[in-house]
Length: 218
Image (cartoon, rainbow, N blue to C red; front, side, top):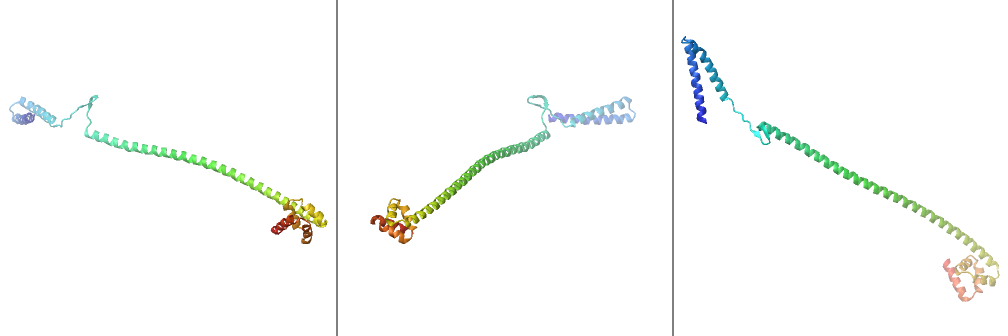
């Protein structure tokens, strides 16, 4: 293959030299025909030389694409750059989707926490209301107890005054029929002299218990 090319180049050079020689002969008046043939031959030889010196281009078919030329190096570089350009865009899209997914999960969790907080606040409100109602009821009961206590104290004082004005025997008979606690309260509201006169006519064991109660009350 190399020897053939060398031979062609040698023939072209010889043809060129022959054309030059013929031109010289024509200039010296040796013949008209030579004059016209030499330049044409020289042009053909020059065109053939230019064609052979031009770099050969190859065209191969891509599988699946009949007649399509194979991509050159520049085309492959462009394709690689395009692929690299697409990869960051795809990666950015995945990151954005992941961020949106996490944001939705956080929003859902925050909404659930808010609902729980609202329920706790509602329960706390109901509990505070119940506590307020219980405190109001307790205050009312305490007021009633106080009123009852005041009434009892007033009644005990009146009985003590009444029994003090009665003969000791009669007062002792009535006091023995009362509850021990009430009897002690009545005797405690009497003057000591009147209470002693009544205890003197009460049986000894009963009078002893009443006296002890009076001491403990004071």
